[in-house]
Length: 107
Image (cartoon, rainbow, N blue to C red; front, side):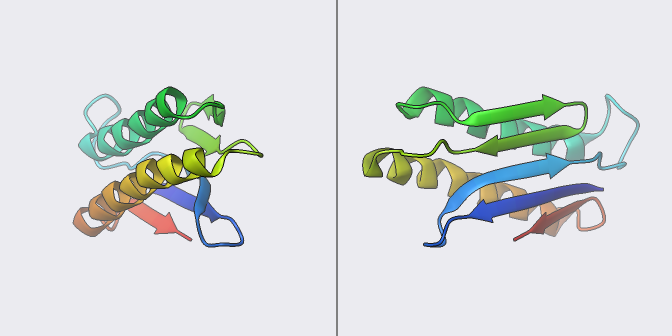
C-alpha cells in the first residue's frame, strides 16, 4: 500500500508531504496506481520548483518521496504553494477513493 502523509503548519496550510510504499495493484512496471501516485507527486515537486523563489527540500529513494516547503517563504510564494499542494491533495484523495486498498492519505 502507498501511504501519504500531508504535513500542515499552525495555520492549517500544507507545508509538505511524505509518500512511501508501493501499491501492489500490479507487478512493478505495470502498476497504474503507483504510476498515478508518482506522477501526481512528481508534478507537484516540479510545480513547486518552477513557481517558487526558493526550492522545496526534496528527499527521494525507491518507494519514497518527501517534500517540504523551505522556511521563510514570502506570502505570495506560500499562496502559490497552497494551490499546487492542494491540487496534490485532491489528486491523491481521488486515487484513494478509486483504489482504497492501495492508497491511504493521512493527515
